[in-house]
Length: 68
Ligand SMILES: [Zn+2]
Image (cartoon, rainbow, N blue to C red; front, side, top):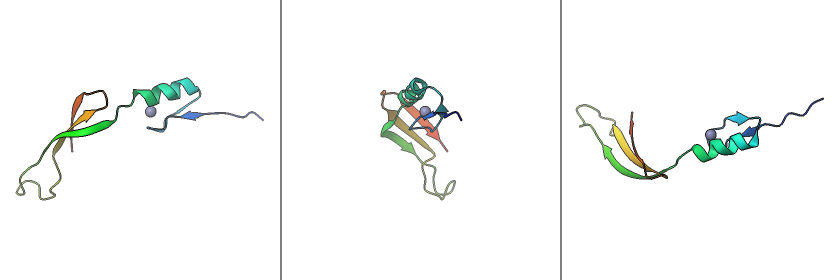
């Protein structure tokens, strides 16, 4: 019987045969640090009240816009 060891990225869950590749995957992920701005639609267009877009500052200082 052969034992098979796999390593999973703790952030996205992807499995790798090589621990170094799993570590590289973990290091590649950037975390959101703060909201820069949220944009909303008026109640007549979207009664849910949730933001339509969110701009987030990431751990590497980049600002990214997310839409729903
Ligand atoms: Zn990952």
